[in-house]
Amino acid sequence: MPMYQPSKRDGVVGFAGGRDGHVLDLDTAVKDGVLGGIGGGVVGAGAGEKLDLKKMIEELDLSEVPSVFICPISLEPMQDPVTLCTGQTYERSNILKWFNLGHLTCPTTMQELWDDSVTPNRTLYHLIITWFSQKYLLMKKRSEDVQGRASELLETLKKVKGQARVQALKELQQVVAVHATARKTVIEEGGVAAISSLLGPFTSHAVGAEAIGILVHLTLDSESKTNLMQPAKISLLVDILNEGSVETKISCTKLIETLMEEKDFRSEIVSSHSLLVGLMRLVKDKRHKNGVLPGLGLLKTICLHEEVRGLIVRIGAIPQLVDLLPSLDHECLELALFILDALSTLPEGILALKVCSNTIPNMVRLLMRISESCTQYALSILWSVCKLAPEECSSVAVDAGLAAKLLLVIQSGCGPVLKQRSAELLKLCSLNYTDTLFISKCKLTRTIQ
Image 1 (tube, rainbow, N blue to C red):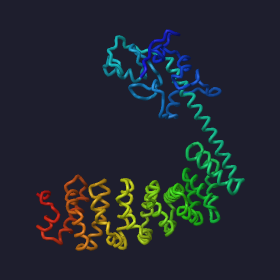
Image 2: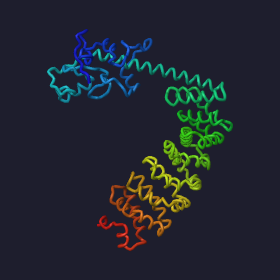
Image 3: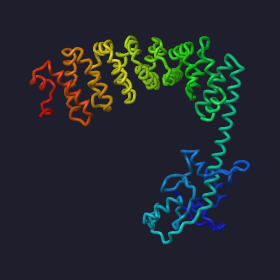
Image 4: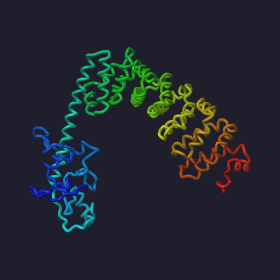
């Protein structure tokens, strides 16, 4: 951190740390590019408008600020910089707190202070407010430009068709994806209804994909959601989910999940074989891993509707999800286990889990590995499967190391419900063995003692 020393010029504190250790005044600091080439003087904010430094710092929320503007104590931009006798500069409130704690040293150098007075560093303050003013006014100008461009594109969409419409939608999508002000403009100017009206039975996938890509970035009210739940629009969404690019498929899943938040949502809307097949394709796509999380997220939301679970089982989702488990990260793994546990509430779901050869070994492997919720889901699935066919499944589970894992759960800090279920499953598994054989087969002698 450069040091600040009294300037010989104008009687104000100057900026030390220039070439050869010479003290820099404001003009020299700007000329020599100490601050990355900002212009001299505070930028005006427009007629009668006064810029507030605190407001600018909060609204800009910049990740990269010149280090000379940062208080060494708080590591935040300074709003009222003051300099000590050691030449170090701090935010006034921070250094005064330091003094109030009984410290009579410089926090940076730990030198004892021969003078505890602080001097306002007006030159540095001028540099700070100049730099932030320029950034703030540039941000405002860009925001106004973006709002204007969003309005223009909405007007263009009313006039053009074909490839020109696709191009206008593509540009609007790029704008709303980045700028909150553009999203606000689109909503306020009736853009949601205008873009939603483009979705229908005769909409090309090129137009539909771009329109959906815009809608997922906008806040939809109840009326807009209801409008989008029309059968023709849902049908187009499902078609694009199956045939679009991975980015478009992700947008489709997010939009459908948004629609499912509406209180008047009907489960028959997602009771679609084509929709569920498309989701499973997205989840299993090894080339595009970024589609797994949104795909599983929507599948979990759909599973909350009990009447749809049977269809999910019938499309063969269970063995596909079970085989996918070892390759999933923790967040996706928890979603997949939730789905499998929900499907195990159905007789056909339990049967599908039983006949899948990887169900038991994968579930045993996950016990006490990821999180308590994952252990809970895996244990629930194992219980359902082993209870369905105790003799057959229990022996497979014991061979996979289930007994040792269950003892770990019982001895762990997991909740009482989880421990009780573990004890019940351990008892179920032991029914096919004598005590001695069960202990020797599972190699649990040391653990039990």
